[in-house]
Length: 351
Image 1: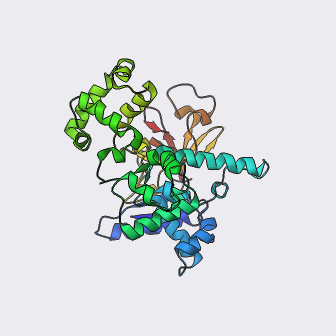
Image 2: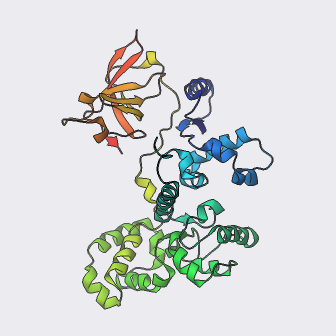
Image 3: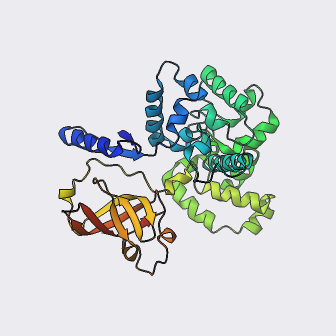
């Protein structure tokens, strides 16, 4: 897999790689990756600590490649302002901007959850209850003692006390640990309640790892009367609902619902385009008259405002945003001007 940054010479690099792939017999793919903030990271103190013997340009390349592997884990290393959050970001109160952006990052990290056995200190430091010192201590403990098998082991980490444990435990995940509940967002304090719920329904925690049992369990969980069962199990309604939600999707990453990165094994030459072709592309620009979509040829194709939807569209921004991955149909090709007309009518759009 080859990651190509979307900055300077991105299109030329894409053409070079596609030519390389066409001559290679191995299974090769490439993807275009946003490189916003990569140069800031490459010259940062953190990058110097991570790669002391590698020059700045190569650190930036590593960052771009890692964004393809795990964007969240890599992007948290960069000050949110360096990623670019609009043309007026320098005109607003910088302290409030920083607090707001950091809050969004914290929400994202805690919503997704963090694999405590693979996370970097940068990622761990955004978890509720964990500061930079504790994050480094977790990684040092992991390096010295091997992978953690249960969340309770975190209490052995220097400076991670009971209070911090109560805050962070539900956001940390342990895959392949002693208890299948460790891959869910169920807090250790609620393990007993979760196990009681499973027992009452005729299941055990081990059934969370069995796909056939899990699909049965998921259906039964949908039919639970939360109000009645909360009294029976002596647990709050909100807590019980949270447990039900987590048991319905053990170990599932909420990002699975996001549109997948477009992986290309070849870039279509303009001459290869045919009318009625259905292609997947990325929205690169939105204007008053439509949207420009990158479909892998040298020039972006235009989806005119009249072709954005089967319904009336007043403003293209109501339908698409920059970065959206969309399905488009080729409806017009101007070979002389090298222009492509596209349509999103009757095509599925992923926002």
